[in-house]
Length: 229
Ligand code: ADP
Ligand code: ADP
Image 1 (cartoon, rainbow, N blue to C red):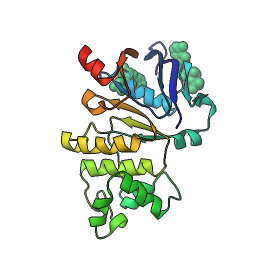
Image 2 (cartoon, rainbow, N blue to C red):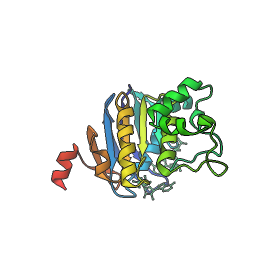
Image 3 (tube, protein in one colour):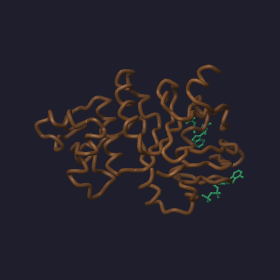
């Protein structure tokens, strides 16, 4: 379980417009850190730098103490599993959707990922099981079910780091609570970084970073921040 760290990261998309102003934080190995803040604060930018869609102007992004600019794209992708807000499924079978991105996943691994994502009971009720077509051509899944297939797709790669980018923001609050419980369970033996809007969705984080205008405005545990705000 690797640690993740941002070290004095300065970054912007356009010259002359700095978005992250020397950002530093650490997610210790196995810890769960959450980032909250208003829209435009720079939360998704952190995710994009972690995936190396962009490189910092200065400073470093480290995984297990190693500058990610020095690791291959393939090992970076293997290290980090992302669960985005709106997962797009292919017009294909549930099994294909789970195995996608993990070439050569065995049937057992697909079943295990489905179990970990708590979607196995649904699949067992379907006459065609993992062969069930989803999307426009086949079964319409609810938002929550789709999100669980996306979680299984991420878990089948067994990534040591999970990046949850507003993973439950698009769901109604009951579905959100169900899926949060699953995410909590599958994060247990991993290092995780959650990007969130609402404090209620990250109550179990070891540390919460509050971002404003590309800087850390506050940091602390959930009770400490609730007391302060
Ligand atoms: P890469 O290493 O990926 O080639 P660069 O470091 O060259 O990326 O920078 C990418 C973009 O950021 C470019 O458009 C560049 O003009 C801009 N940029 C880089 N450093 C700064 C800076 N200190 N201030 C403003 N813009 C910068
Ligand atoms: P958040 O995720 O906290 O809502 P973002 O990281 O998406 O914030 O955005 C931070 C800032 O960077 C915003 O001012 C946004 O307009 C700007 N920004 C985001 N993406 C781009 C881009 N591709 N090009 C230029 N500016 C961008």
